[in-house]
Length: 148
Image (tube, rainbow, N blue to C red; front, side, top):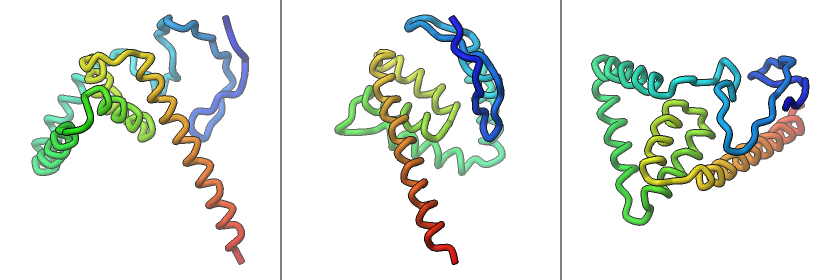
């Protein structure tokens, strides 16, 4: 079943396309646009790790600092692994970090999170992004009022 055709935003550009509807529980290989879709997450993960090793040679102190920060953030007394990964996935989405999505989707699966639990956390991330857009829209109005 197809929805549309319609204009679809890609960054600042809009393209004309037809969007297929997706039934819950089904998997589609082309679920995202070509410029954002990662078709093979295992290959992506491997390539990311290889580039990380290269960066570690180029700037070992930065990688040591990142590793220490990551270990510190995952060592908690009050949050369990599921809660940490829900937070991590929501932040990964709001910061548009594909490497973070990859790493924390894997950790979420290992922690036993369900797609339903993850979807609820991502709903919060979506709402906060909308809230940020609203807040910054108000800043635009303030700026317009402050112009001479």
